[in-house]
Length: 252
Length: 216
Image 1: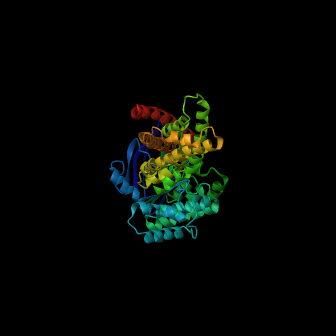
Image 2: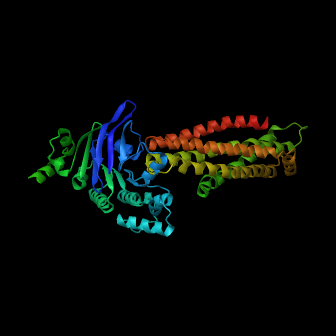
Image 3: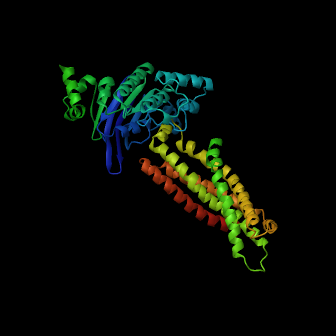
Protein backbone atom coordinates (compact mmCIF):
# COMPACT_ATOMS: atom_id res chain seq x y z
CA UNK A 1 0.00 0.00 0.00
CA UNK A 2 1.16 3.54 -0.77
CA UNK A 3 -0.03 6.44 1.33
CA UNK A 4 0.27 10.08 0.31
CA UNK A 5 0.06 12.53 3.20
CA UNK A 6 -0.62 16.23 2.67
CA UNK A 7 1.64 16.51 -0.37
CA UNK A 8 2.09 19.96 -1.89
CA UNK A 9 4.36 20.94 -4.75
CA UNK A 10 5.08 24.28 -6.34
CA UNK A 11 7.14 25.16 -9.43
CA UNK A 12 8.10 28.82 -9.16
CA UNK A 13 4.87 30.78 -8.88
CA UNK A 14 2.67 27.87 -9.93
CA UNK A 15 1.18 25.75 -7.14
CA UNK A 16 0.71 22.38 -8.86
CA UNK A 17 -0.32 20.15 -5.94
CA UNK A 18 -2.22 21.38 -2.87
CA UNK A 19 -2.36 19.31 0.26
CA UNK A 20 -3.13 15.95 -1.34
CA UNK A 21 -3.76 12.97 0.93
CA UNK A 22 -4.85 9.57 -0.30
CA UNK A 23 -4.16 5.83 -0.11
CA UNK A 24 -3.46 3.46 -2.97
CA UNK A 25 -4.46 -0.08 -2.10
CA UNK A 26 -2.58 -3.29 -2.80
CA UNK A 27 -3.88 -5.79 -5.40
CA UNK A 28 -6.20 -3.32 -7.11
CA UNK A 29 -5.83 -0.91 -10.01
CA UNK A 30 -5.72 2.56 -8.44
CA UNK A 31 -6.28 5.34 -10.95
CA UNK A 32 -5.46 9.02 -10.80
CA UNK A 33 -7.60 10.98 -13.23
CA UNK A 34 -8.01 14.63 -14.07
CA UNK A 35 -7.71 17.19 -16.82
CA UNK A 36 -4.39 17.99 -18.46
CA UNK A 37 -2.45 20.23 -16.07
CA UNK A 38 -4.36 19.05 -13.00
CA UNK A 39 -1.17 17.66 -11.45
CA UNK A 40 -1.50 13.91 -12.14
CA UNK A 41 1.99 13.35 -13.52
CA UNK A 42 3.56 15.63 -10.90
CA UNK A 43 1.84 13.60 -8.18
CA UNK A 44 3.19 10.38 -9.71
CA UNK A 45 6.69 11.88 -9.91
CA UNK A 46 6.45 12.97 -6.27
CA UNK A 47 5.43 9.45 -5.27
CA UNK A 48 8.31 7.75 -7.12
CA UNK A 49 10.82 10.35 -5.97
CA UNK A 50 11.56 12.15 -9.24
CA UNK A 51 10.24 15.34 -7.59
CA UNK A 52 10.59 16.14 -3.90
CA UNK A 53 7.33 17.48 -2.46
CA UNK A 54 7.58 20.90 -0.77
CA UNK A 55 5.39 19.58 2.05
CA UNK A 56 3.94 16.24 3.08
CA UNK A 57 5.17 12.68 2.91
CA UNK A 58 4.87 9.48 0.87
CA UNK A 59 4.78 6.13 2.66
CA UNK A 60 5.55 2.80 1.03
CA UNK A 61 3.94 0.15 3.27
CA UNK A 62 4.44 2.48 6.22
CA UNK A 63 8.01 3.47 5.31
CA UNK A 64 8.47 7.21 4.82
CA UNK A 65 10.15 7.64 1.43
CA UNK A 66 11.25 11.21 2.05
CA UNK A 67 12.98 10.45 5.34
CA UNK A 68 14.89 7.46 3.97
CA UNK A 69 18.61 7.56 3.31
CA UNK A 70 19.96 7.07 -0.21
CA UNK A 71 20.56 3.35 0.23
CA UNK A 72 17.07 2.71 1.62
CA UNK A 73 15.56 4.70 -1.26
CA UNK A 74 17.56 2.61 -3.68
CA UNK A 75 16.13 -0.55 -2.11
CA UNK A 76 12.55 0.79 -2.43
CA UNK A 77 13.19 1.78 -6.05
CA UNK A 78 14.17 -1.80 -6.81
CA UNK A 79 10.61 -2.70 -5.79
CA UNK A 80 9.09 -0.18 -8.23
CA UNK A 81 8.20 -0.91 -11.83
CA UNK A 82 7.18 1.98 -14.04
CA UNK A 83 5.61 2.19 -17.45
CA UNK A 84 6.14 5.63 -18.97
CA UNK A 85 3.86 7.51 -21.34
CA UNK A 86 6.58 7.31 -24.01
CA UNK A 87 7.49 3.73 -22.94
CA UNK A 88 11.04 5.03 -22.28
CA UNK A 89 12.68 1.93 -23.73
CA UNK A 90 16.43 2.30 -24.20
CA UNK A 91 16.97 2.95 -27.91
CA UNK A 92 20.39 1.35 -28.03
CA UNK A 93 19.15 -1.95 -26.58
CA UNK A 94 17.11 -4.72 -28.16
CA UNK A 95 13.77 -5.83 -26.73
CA UNK A 96 15.44 -8.66 -24.80
CA UNK A 97 18.22 -6.40 -23.47
CA UNK A 98 15.64 -3.83 -22.34
CA UNK A 99 13.72 -6.41 -20.33
CA UNK A 100 16.93 -7.91 -18.91
CA UNK A 101 18.34 -4.50 -17.97
CA UNK A 102 16.93 -4.25 -14.40
CA UNK A 103 18.04 -7.84 -13.71
CA UNK A 104 21.55 -7.11 -14.99
CA UNK A 105 21.76 -4.07 -12.74
CA UNK A 106 20.20 -5.41 -9.56
CA UNK A 107 20.19 -9.19 -9.40
CA UNK A 108 22.77 -11.91 -9.01
CA UNK A 109 20.99 -14.05 -11.58
CA UNK A 110 23.00 -15.97 -14.14
CA UNK A 111 22.56 -15.16 -17.82
CA UNK A 112 20.37 -18.24 -18.40
CA UNK A 113 18.09 -17.31 -15.52
CA UNK A 114 17.82 -13.72 -16.74
CA UNK A 115 16.97 -14.90 -20.26
CA UNK A 116 14.36 -17.28 -18.89
CA UNK A 117 12.75 -14.59 -16.74
CA UNK A 118 12.83 -12.05 -19.60
CA UNK A 119 11.20 -14.56 -21.96
CA UNK A 120 8.51 -15.26 -19.35
CA UNK A 121 7.78 -11.53 -19.00
CA UNK A 122 7.67 -11.01 -22.76
CA UNK A 123 5.35 -14.00 -23.23
CA UNK A 124 3.17 -12.64 -20.44
CA UNK A 125 2.64 -9.43 -22.43
CA UNK A 126 2.26 -11.42 -25.66
CA UNK A 127 5.48 -10.31 -27.31
CA UNK A 128 6.87 -13.41 -28.95
CA UNK A 129 9.68 -13.69 -31.49
CA UNK A 130 10.65 -10.01 -31.26
CA UNK A 131 13.59 -10.40 -28.85
CA UNK A 132 16.20 -9.10 -31.29
CA UNK A 133 14.25 -6.05 -32.51
CA UNK A 134 15.06 -2.53 -31.35
CA UNK A 135 12.41 -0.11 -29.95
CA UNK A 136 12.36 1.92 -33.17
CA UNK A 137 11.25 -1.22 -35.04
CA UNK A 138 8.19 -1.76 -32.81
CA UNK A 139 4.70 -0.26 -33.00
CA UNK A 140 3.48 2.01 -30.17
CA UNK A 141 1.40 -0.79 -28.65
CA UNK A 142 4.33 -3.22 -28.75
CA UNK A 143 6.60 -0.65 -27.14
CA UNK A 144 4.08 -0.25 -24.32
CA UNK A 145 3.95 -4.01 -23.82
CA UNK A 146 7.74 -4.28 -23.76
CA UNK A 147 7.70 -1.40 -21.25
CA UNK A 148 5.32 -3.44 -19.08
CA UNK A 149 7.53 -6.52 -19.44
CA UNK A 150 10.53 -4.47 -18.26
CA UNK A 151 8.48 -3.01 -15.40
CA UNK A 152 7.49 -6.46 -14.10
CA UNK A 153 10.88 -8.09 -14.71
CA UNK A 154 11.98 -7.69 -11.08
CA UNK A 155 8.56 -8.71 -9.71
CA UNK A 156 7.81 -5.23 -8.35
CA UNK A 157 5.64 -4.58 -5.32
CA UNK A 158 4.59 -1.23 -6.77
CA UNK A 159 3.64 -0.65 -10.40
CA UNK A 160 3.22 2.84 -11.87
CA UNK A 161 1.73 3.44 -15.31
CA UNK A 162 1.76 6.97 -16.72
CA UNK A 163 -0.87 7.33 -19.47
CA UNK A 164 -0.43 3.68 -20.52
CA UNK A 165 -2.81 3.83 -23.47
CA UNK A 166 -2.23 7.32 -24.83
CA UNK A 167 -1.68 7.28 -28.58
CA UNK A 168 -2.96 3.72 -28.96
CA UNK A 169 -5.90 2.44 -30.99
CA UNK A 170 -8.97 1.42 -28.91
CA UNK A 171 -8.33 -2.33 -29.21
CA UNK A 172 -4.69 -2.08 -28.16
CA UNK A 173 -5.65 0.32 -25.37
CA UNK A 174 -8.12 -2.23 -23.98
CA UNK A 175 -5.47 -4.94 -24.29
CA UNK A 176 -3.00 -2.85 -22.27
CA UNK A 177 -5.66 -1.99 -19.64
CA UNK A 178 -6.60 -5.62 -19.20
CA UNK A 179 -2.95 -6.63 -19.02
CA UNK A 180 -2.29 -4.13 -16.22
CA UNK A 181 -5.33 -5.40 -14.31
CA UNK A 182 -4.34 -9.05 -14.73
CA UNK A 183 -0.75 -8.40 -13.65
CA UNK A 184 -1.93 -6.42 -10.63
CA UNK A 185 -4.09 -9.30 -9.46
CA UNK A 186 -1.55 -11.98 -10.41
CA UNK A 187 1.42 -10.38 -8.61
CA UNK A 188 -0.65 -8.56 -5.95
CA UNK A 189 1.06 -5.24 -6.71
CA UNK A 190 0.03 -1.77 -5.62
CA UNK A 191 -0.73 -0.37 -9.04
CA UNK A 192 -1.21 3.33 -9.78
CA UNK A 193 -2.37 4.30 -13.26
CA UNK A 194 -2.30 7.94 -14.34
CA UNK A 195 -4.88 8.41 -17.07
CA UNK A 196 -7.51 10.61 -18.61
CA UNK A 197 -8.92 7.82 -20.74
CA UNK A 198 -12.49 7.35 -19.51
CA UNK A 199 -12.81 4.02 -21.27
CA UNK A 200 -9.93 2.75 -19.19
CA UNK A 201 -11.44 4.15 -15.99
CA UNK A 202 -14.80 2.46 -16.59
CA UNK A 203 -13.17 -0.84 -17.62
CA UNK A 204 -10.49 -1.28 -14.96
CA UNK A 205 -10.70 1.45 -12.30
CA UNK A 206 -11.19 0.11 -8.78
CA UNK A 207 -9.97 2.97 -6.61
CA UNK A 208 -10.21 6.27 -8.50
CA UNK A 209 -8.74 9.58 -7.38
CA UNK A 210 -9.91 12.68 -9.25
CA UNK A 211 -7.57 15.69 -9.21
CA UNK A 212 -8.88 19.15 -10.00
CA UNK A 213 -6.84 22.36 -9.83
CA UNK A 214 -4.08 20.55 -7.96
CA UNK A 215 -6.40 19.24 -5.22
CA UNK A 216 -7.88 15.83 -4.54
CA UNK A 217 -11.45 16.59 -5.55
CA UNK A 218 -13.02 13.16 -5.27
CA UNK A 219 -12.14 9.51 -4.54
CA UNK A 220 -14.16 6.34 -4.94
CA UNK A 221 -14.95 3.24 -7.00
CA UNK A 222 -16.45 2.81 -10.46
CA UNK A 223 -20.07 2.64 -9.30
CA UNK A 224 -19.76 5.77 -7.16
CA UNK A 225 -18.07 7.50 -10.09
CA UNK A 226 -21.06 6.93 -12.34
CA UNK A 227 -23.54 8.03 -9.68
CA UNK A 228 -21.59 10.95 -8.23
CA UNK A 229 -23.24 14.36 -8.06
CA UNK A 230 -19.89 16.17 -7.93
CA UNK A 231 -20.26 18.78 -10.71
CA UNK A 232 -16.55 19.03 -11.62
CA UNK A 233 -16.20 15.26 -11.72
CA UNK A 234 -19.31 14.88 -13.85
CA UNK A 235 -18.14 17.63 -16.21
CA UNK A 236 -14.87 15.74 -16.65
CA UNK A 237 -16.25 12.19 -16.91
CA UNK A 238 -19.26 12.91 -19.05
CA UNK A 239 -17.69 15.46 -21.36
CA UNK A 240 -18.38 13.32 -24.44
CA UNK A 241 -21.71 12.18 -25.91
CA UNK A 242 -20.47 8.62 -25.78
CA UNK A 243 -19.91 8.74 -22.01
CA UNK A 244 -23.31 10.34 -21.44
CA UNK A 245 -24.88 7.60 -23.54
CA UNK A 246 -22.90 4.94 -21.63
CA UNK A 247 -24.13 6.36 -18.31
CA UNK A 248 -27.75 6.29 -19.45
CA UNK A 249 -27.33 2.71 -20.67
CA UNK A 250 -25.71 1.57 -17.43
CA UNK A 251 -28.17 3.29 -15.10
CA UNK A 252 -31.35 2.35 -16.98
CA UNK B 1 33.51 1.35 -22.15
CA UNK B 2 34.95 -0.42 -25.22
CA UNK B 3 31.74 0.37 -27.09
CA UNK B 4 32.06 4.04 -26.14
CA UNK B 5 35.70 4.09 -27.26
CA UNK B 6 34.57 2.68 -30.58
CA UNK B 7 31.73 5.18 -30.96
CA UNK B 8 33.62 8.26 -29.82
CA UNK B 9 37.07 7.48 -31.15
CA UNK B 10 37.37 4.76 -33.76
CA UNK B 11 34.39 6.03 -35.76
CA UNK B 12 36.01 9.49 -35.94
CA UNK B 13 39.19 8.06 -37.43
CA UNK B 14 38.16 8.64 -41.06
CA UNK B 15 37.40 12.32 -40.50
CA UNK B 16 40.59 12.82 -38.47
CA UNK B 17 42.71 11.08 -41.13
CA UNK B 18 41.24 13.09 -43.99
CA UNK B 19 41.61 16.40 -42.14
CA UNK B 20 45.16 15.62 -41.05
CA UNK B 21 46.54 14.60 -44.45
CA UNK B 22 45.16 17.66 -46.21
CA UNK B 23 46.00 20.11 -43.43
CA UNK B 24 49.57 18.74 -43.29
CA UNK B 25 49.84 19.24 -47.06
CA UNK B 26 48.46 22.78 -46.87
CA UNK B 27 50.74 23.75 -43.96
CA UNK B 28 53.75 22.55 -45.98
CA UNK B 29 52.68 24.45 -49.10
CA UNK B 30 51.94 27.67 -47.21
CA UNK B 31 55.17 27.51 -45.23
CA UNK B 32 57.26 26.98 -48.36
CA UNK B 33 55.58 29.84 -50.24
CA UNK B 34 56.14 32.18 -47.28
CA UNK B 35 59.82 31.33 -46.90
CA UNK B 36 61.44 32.79 -49.99
CA UNK B 37 64.57 34.33 -48.50
CA UNK B 38 67.65 32.59 -49.90
CA UNK B 39 69.44 32.58 -46.54
CA UNK B 40 66.73 30.47 -44.86
CA UNK B 41 67.52 26.78 -45.36
CA UNK B 42 64.84 24.71 -47.11
CA UNK B 43 64.62 22.21 -44.28
CA UNK B 44 62.91 24.90 -42.18
CA UNK B 45 59.73 24.03 -44.10
CA UNK B 46 59.75 20.50 -42.63
CA UNK B 47 60.67 21.85 -39.20
CA UNK B 48 57.83 24.39 -39.24
CA UNK B 49 55.30 21.87 -40.53
CA UNK B 50 56.29 19.41 -37.77
CA UNK B 51 56.06 22.02 -35.03
CA UNK B 52 52.73 23.39 -36.29
CA UNK B 53 51.19 19.95 -36.54
CA UNK B 54 52.44 18.58 -33.21
CA UNK B 55 51.99 21.70 -31.11
CA UNK B 56 48.73 23.10 -32.41
CA UNK B 57 47.04 21.51 -35.39
CA UNK B 58 46.65 17.94 -34.15
CA UNK B 59 45.81 18.52 -30.48
CA UNK B 60 43.77 21.73 -30.77
CA UNK B 61 42.24 21.93 -34.23
CA UNK B 62 41.38 18.22 -34.31
CA UNK B 63 39.90 18.54 -30.82
CA UNK B 64 37.72 21.42 -32.05
CA UNK B 65 36.59 19.22 -34.94
CA UNK B 66 35.87 16.42 -32.47
CA UNK B 67 33.93 18.88 -30.29
CA UNK B 68 31.65 19.33 -33.28
CA UNK B 69 31.29 15.66 -34.13
CA UNK B 70 31.52 13.87 -30.79
CA UNK B 71 30.17 16.72 -28.62
CA UNK B 72 26.99 17.17 -30.63
CA UNK B 73 26.53 13.40 -30.71
CA UNK B 74 26.81 13.11 -26.92
CA UNK B 75 24.50 16.07 -26.23
CA UNK B 76 21.90 14.82 -28.71
CA UNK B 77 22.02 11.24 -27.40
CA UNK B 78 21.69 12.19 -23.73
CA UNK B 79 19.22 14.99 -24.50
CA UNK B 80 16.98 12.57 -26.39
CA UNK B 81 17.16 10.15 -23.48
CA UNK B 82 16.08 13.00 -21.19
CA UNK B 83 13.06 14.12 -23.25
CA UNK B 84 11.99 10.51 -23.91
CA UNK B 85 11.98 9.82 -20.15
CA UNK B 86 14.75 7.19 -20.44
CA UNK B 87 16.80 9.04 -17.81
CA UNK B 88 13.75 9.13 -15.53
CA UNK B 89 13.45 5.37 -16.05
CA UNK B 90 17.05 4.90 -14.89
CA UNK B 91 16.50 7.16 -11.86
CA UNK B 92 13.34 5.29 -10.84
CA UNK B 93 15.21 1.99 -11.07
CA UNK B 94 17.61 3.44 -8.49
CA UNK B 95 20.48 3.84 -10.94
CA UNK B 96 22.66 6.95 -10.74
CA UNK B 97 21.85 8.06 -14.29
CA UNK B 98 24.56 10.72 -14.54
CA UNK B 99 27.25 8.31 -13.49
CA UNK B 100 25.88 5.45 -15.61
CA UNK B 101 25.56 7.52 -18.79
CA UNK B 102 28.31 10.12 -18.58
CA UNK B 103 31.28 8.58 -16.79
CA UNK B 104 32.01 5.88 -19.41
CA UNK B 105 31.98 8.54 -22.14
CA UNK B 106 34.44 10.77 -20.28
CA UNK B 107 36.83 7.92 -19.50
CA UNK B 108 36.55 6.46 -23.01
CA UNK B 109 37.28 9.81 -24.67
CA UNK B 110 40.24 10.50 -22.37
CA UNK B 111 41.68 7.11 -23.29
CA UNK B 112 41.03 7.03 -27.04
CA UNK B 113 41.56 10.67 -28.08
CA UNK B 114 45.37 10.61 -27.51
CA UNK B 115 45.60 7.71 -29.99
CA UNK B 116 43.61 9.71 -32.54
CA UNK B 117 45.86 12.71 -32.07
CA UNK B 118 49.06 10.66 -32.45
CA UNK B 119 47.63 9.20 -35.67
CA UNK B 120 46.72 12.74 -36.77
CA UNK B 121 50.31 13.88 -36.14
CA UNK B 122 51.74 11.09 -38.28
CA UNK B 123 49.21 11.62 -41.07
CA UNK B 124 49.67 15.40 -41.04
CA UNK B 125 53.42 15.02 -41.46
CA UNK B 126 52.80 12.32 -44.07
CA UNK B 127 50.60 14.77 -46.01
CA UNK B 128 53.39 17.34 -45.94
CA UNK B 129 55.95 14.78 -47.13
CA UNK B 130 53.68 13.66 -50.00
CA UNK B 131 53.18 17.25 -51.15
CA UNK B 132 56.93 17.83 -51.01
CA UNK B 133 57.34 14.94 -53.46
CA UNK B 134 54.41 15.87 -55.69
CA UNK B 135 55.04 19.61 -56.02
CA UNK B 136 58.76 19.97 -55.45
CA UNK B 137 58.27 23.15 -53.39
CA UNK B 138 60.75 21.55 -51.02
CA UNK B 139 62.86 18.48 -51.62
CA UNK B 140 61.76 15.35 -49.67
CA UNK B 141 65.28 15.07 -48.21
CA UNK B 142 65.11 18.67 -46.99
CA UNK B 143 61.64 18.04 -45.60
CA UNK B 144 62.78 14.96 -43.68
CA UNK B 145 65.87 16.76 -42.42
CA UNK B 146 63.59 19.52 -41.11
CA UNK B 147 61.39 16.95 -39.39
CA UNK B 148 64.41 15.60 -37.51
CA UNK B 149 66.00 18.95 -36.73
CA UNK B 150 65.96 20.07 -33.08
CA UNK B 151 63.21 17.64 -32.11
CA UNK B 152 62.11 17.88 -28.48
CA UNK B 153 59.97 14.90 -27.40
CA UNK B 154 58.39 17.10 -24.73
CA UNK B 155 56.31 18.77 -27.49
CA UNK B 156 54.48 15.45 -27.97
CA UNK B 157 53.96 15.11 -24.22
CA UNK B 158 52.57 18.66 -24.15
CA UNK B 159 50.24 17.87 -27.06
CA UNK B 160 48.98 14.69 -25.38
CA UNK B 161 48.36 16.45 -22.05
CA UNK B 162 46.31 19.04 -23.93
CA UNK B 163 44.42 16.28 -25.73
CA UNK B 164 43.41 14.53 -22.51
CA UNK B 165 42.17 17.83 -21.03
CA UNK B 166 40.26 18.64 -24.23
CA UNK B 167 38.69 15.16 -24.24
CA UNK B 168 37.44 15.78 -20.71
CA UNK B 169 36.07 19.20 -21.71
CA UNK B 170 34.28 17.92 -24.83
CA UNK B 171 32.57 15.00 -23.10
CA UNK B 172 31.70 16.68 -19.81
CA UNK B 173 30.42 19.97 -21.29
CA UNK B 174 28.38 18.15 -23.96
CA UNK B 175 26.99 15.61 -21.49
CA UNK B 176 26.01 18.42 -19.12
CA UNK B 177 24.04 20.21 -21.84
CA UNK B 178 22.37 16.96 -22.91
CA UNK B 179 21.55 15.85 -19.37
CA UNK B 180 19.80 19.10 -18.46
CA UNK B 181 17.77 19.37 -21.67
CA UNK B 182 14.15 20.37 -21.04
CA UNK B 183 11.39 20.18 -23.62
CA UNK B 184 11.31 18.27 -26.89
CA UNK B 185 13.12 17.72 -30.17
CA UNK B 186 13.74 21.45 -30.72
CA UNK B 187 15.47 21.75 -27.34
CA UNK B 188 17.59 18.67 -28.07
CA UNK B 189 18.86 20.45 -31.19
CA UNK B 190 19.54 23.59 -29.16
CA UNK B 191 21.40 21.61 -26.49
CA UNK B 192 23.52 20.01 -29.17
CA UNK B 193 24.46 23.37 -30.70
CA UNK B 194 25.11 24.96 -27.30
CA UNK B 195 27.28 22.00 -26.31
CA UNK B 196 29.51 22.47 -29.38
CA UNK B 197 29.78 26.24 -28.88
CA UNK B 198 30.61 25.99 -25.16
CA UNK B 199 33.04 23.09 -25.66
CA UNK B 200 34.88 25.05 -28.34
CA UNK B 201 35.12 28.18 -26.18
CA UNK B 202 36.33 26.24 -23.14
CA UNK B 203 38.87 24.39 -25.33
CA UNK B 204 40.28 27.69 -26.63
CA UNK B 205 40.60 29.12 -23.11
CA UNK B 206 42.13 25.89 -21.79
CA UNK B 207 44.51 25.83 -24.76
CA UNK B 208 45.86 29.25 -23.84
CA UNK B 209 46.19 28.41 -20.13
CA UNK B 210 47.84 25.03 -20.75
CA UNK B 211 50.31 26.54 -23.21
CA UNK B 212 51.28 29.19 -20.68
CA UNK B 213 51.61 26.62 -17.90
CA UNK B 214 53.38 23.85 -19.85
CA UNK B 215 55.51 25.66 -22.44
CA UNK B 216 56.47 29.04 -21.03
